[in-house]
Image 1 (cartoon, rainbow, N blue to C red):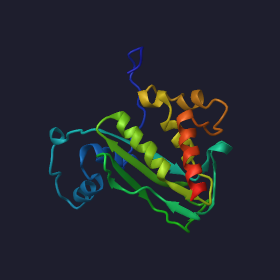
Image 2 (image 1 turned 90 degrees about the vertical axis):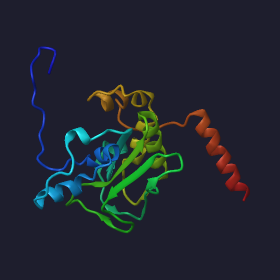
Image 3 (image 1 turned 30 degrees about the vertical axis):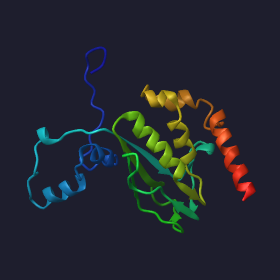
Length: 201
């Protein structure tokens, strides 16, 4: 309902939403399984009152789109595709990666350029965001343009951490387009230490 007390109909999809892993992570329910059971004539084994929310989940959609070129689609062969390890991590966070591609596979112009849906879960928003930042940093993709650097940059923004978001977020935060992110002092020192260590071995 808007400020003028008017109601607006935004959207309705009579199908499984692309974002369903987020719902599954915070409810512990397998929505695909439930849809198949209902399609087979079974009744739902639970009621709405039985659905409990636990923690926070976030999804990053990895696309074969180049953020340095205004997100133009990128086609070609995935010469390297190494997602982060899935499952419950040592700190209790969860990583899930839904994908249909593989290293050596082709990203074609004939299909949607989505490569993967990377999801993380944490007990609170900031923990889920930090887990996502770590998962994005661990994700290796080569051979095509992709939006991993952009997604990683978003995860570093204080405004995103705080959840101060609107539909104008990207236009406001990346007004001149995406040009990469400069390392902060702490990250630059870590990188220098790693480089020095590698150089000595």
